[in-house]
Image 1 (cartoon, rainbow, N blue to C red):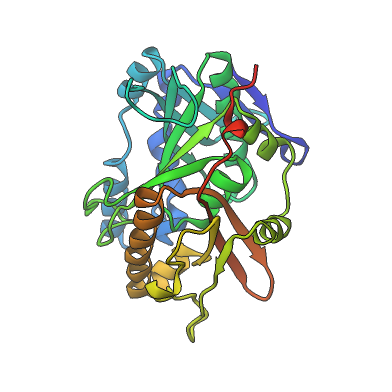
Image 2 (tube, rainbow, N blue to C red):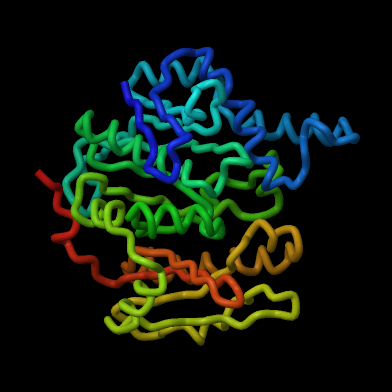
Length: 332
């Protein structure tokens, strides 16, 4: 049984492994509440009952049935629940499934067993308080005890909070972008009308690289200076009248191979989608072209995501051309 108490600043969180279908039945409700922040609507108090019912219906379509979760857990999957320290309220969860490792699949290190983290949800009032980080660490703790070397998951490249967690705090990497991964998500209140491009994060949990990121966090400002000192090429963008960053011209990107590239991207895709849907779609198509070229074709990998707070919040993806293999050796 996994029981993980968070670090000092989050002692009000308790994380434990879930095996009871009664707990699994809470997940659709939790996901519905968790996504209210993205929808910018209180689904349970809006006067327009039809809007509320339609939105809930769309979300429920994306949540697996509790009986299916039970079957997946029985087959080697995992569900972790995050609770307040009295364990009366579930405030977040991770749902992971066993991942088939193909014999011809190329990873950075030899992989025998892997997990795919299919879903993570956190109630709005507990988001941005380190709950997601603690859930990921608890998943890593469980996986290491069960001889799993790799955890993967997908995420939207324009979700800045997720990118910062996945790359800067956890030490995940991405080597490919998958255009329109889930197809046209017309049923989704969050992604209707936009392509579902996704990164697949590879988290090599038993390596020096990951352990360093988790145990010895470095300030983004320090990381940026180090990357620049190492010869990474920085590409900054301009802001429009509304204060949103706009994509640079493709010919402003490095044309010759570089040691690494630091690319500024939008700082808040949720606000961008609401304030300027056209610019949101423009960024998505731009990033698809850029990451297809640098990752899928030229072999770069995303190794970091930096958030710098000055007068404006500035966010940057960091791509490296050559990863150091010794950082990804499995620790004994």
